[in-house]
Image (cartoon, helix red, strand yellow):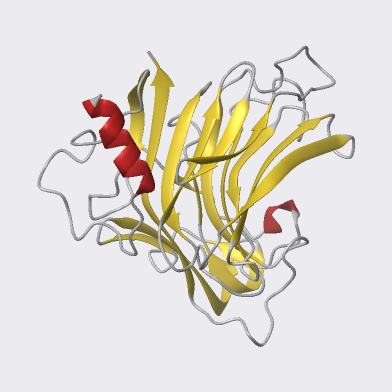
Length: 280
């Protein structure tokens, strides 16, 4: 009963700031509420003063994510760093030239590929969103190996996507089917009754097993999917393989559209923690 109460209180607690400063205790396991029937298998509380290279890899490129995005993803501290117990991913308007050319915006994209990958579990990410036209942060997962073929035959799990011009709404989506352009997707969205996701921290959660995938905001279930497929395997493929996590803040792109005169920079996505649990 005590474990359940602790988990419930942790799920409904919403405040507007990260942890204040570095923890004096073990940042990797101390006082982390564990949902009943699960065990903690991986986490980052961002209690150290730097982004841990053993946990995260920066993707550095100007490829636009395949969505005609406008940013150059860098590994500079200006675009991603730890501050007061939070991972900060910052998008800015600036002329930046790298090996892949010149872009007018910079940002960061971090992933756990080759460092931490999971098949099934519960994923909790507490974060605060930016806002503005053309701002597109995401918390999502991609397959560690394209066992069933190229995107999206091997799947994609979007835990949370958010468009800066709709600050009260987030999306959860699965991508699957055949390789592009024979891919399909299915999903739903969650709308806050008051305020926006840029006003305070919220916890975005996903539970995933061999028969269902469910999405939560602050422990409130808003969708469950039980049907998906791939052209190259039987159910529950493609979501029966290890996936890694990605945290990024895109600028522009096919879905949100480009920034306009109302968009202010810099914009920040702040992440308080990432926690991964698996069933006992």
